[in-house]
Image 1 (cartoon, rainbow, N blue to C red):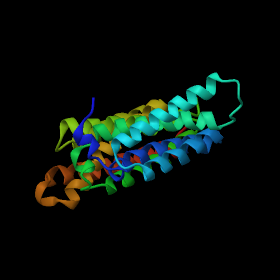
Image 2: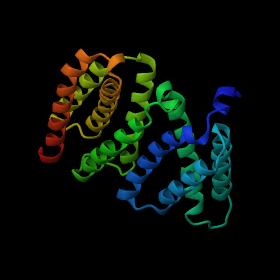
Image 3: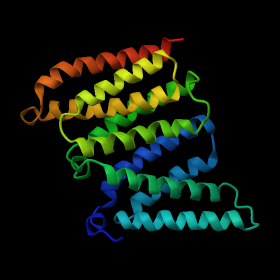
Image 4: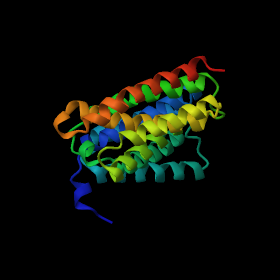
Length: 238
């Protein structure tokens, strides 16, 4: 169904969620070295820079999936092109879904830096987890970024303010899972909690007049301690 508010969303607004999926695909590419995944990254970046608004990306993603399907059912050998089109189409639709659940503040560009602050440590945590043999499959690298971001943004959108305690609680749960050597599950749980916790830490720090400073002073250091404990278990744990 056509939505005027989504039609008003520029490609610059959707670019944030596209970068989330690109980061996930790049983590997958680093470990798998698949040419079609790298091609999908280039196609997604090209599409988001050329598209005018949300629906242009919908059309582009749909066209890529149609072309990929036609390529798969024909007898021609398109090499990595069909795979790149397929993953780019899937990636763009995933980006649009993430944008749909983003909190309104991030959509409106008031704290876009939060996404970039989240992506770098999340990307590193996922790569270290893979390096330590926590994942059984290469594609889990991408899912370990996409699933937590989608869950965290949807959670923040629904819960609203003062969710720092939820983020700290989920990180504590992830630390316990990591101690029990849960692997993929602990990585997804920790990144989810980290994003939820960090959202309030950044928000309360930038806008102290509108934040819960008591919660920040209590749960900020606790969350930072949980981050250090998790990294220690991840890197030096058995």
